[in-house]
Amino acid sequence: MDNLNANVGGEAVVVSNMGFFQKIAGVIFSPGKTMRSIAERPKILFPLLLAAFSQVIVYLVRYPLYQDFMAETLKKSMEIQKTKFNIELTPQQVDQALQIQSISSLVATPIMTLLVWLIGTAVVYGLLKAFKGQGKFKSYLAVTGYAYIITLLYQLIVIAVSFFTGSLYLMVPLTSLASLLPADMAGTFLFGVIKGIDLFSIWFYAVIAIGLAEASKVKKTTVYTIVGIVFALVLLIAGAGEMAQGMYM
Image 1 (tube, rainbow, N blue to C red):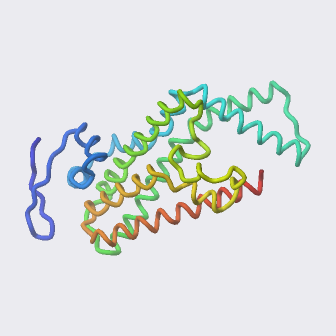
Image 2: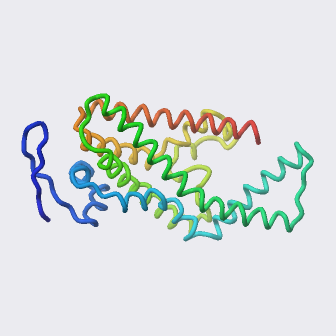
């Protein structure tokens, strides 16, 4: 492992030049040191691929379960259409709709994830610049992108668990607090908020906060507060989405 000198606040510090696999392991076991190295020598290709495809991996590896989930979702949608609009599809139309829905979701998922990653990083980049944050946008993208290693770890666990449970946990995350709530709470604002509170989402945002602090050199308490507010807003949006879905269903 090589070292390089960086200048922070007028003082020379030594930054580790970590290898690819060291960074992957480091995000999990030593995020502070690892994010410092990533911020000083940002690489974008791997974070881009990681952000785009960490969710899709589950769909592809466990495609039969993914199709079962899409079929169940389509069935519920058809029941609503029949009840509210008296629209009923033929079996052939159902099969065609399922194929289109399955493929479109596979295509849309990485696109939407990338947009969320880019827009979210741009927002915190602007906020931290307002607090006189240092670093280039590329460094911010690198540290937030590498945080998706936590998401990938979660997806790999879901794949393993799915062989025993037959579920991909697409409605409620495997480690979400919402799994402890009564089923009849689904579709409520509170359920949507609590659904977003799980071990891996908290870990994900914690790693992002550590990375942004290293990239921006802004006081850690300020960075952690900003990331905490962003996480809270995400939970509120999730709650609103769950409530809207409950009203539709």
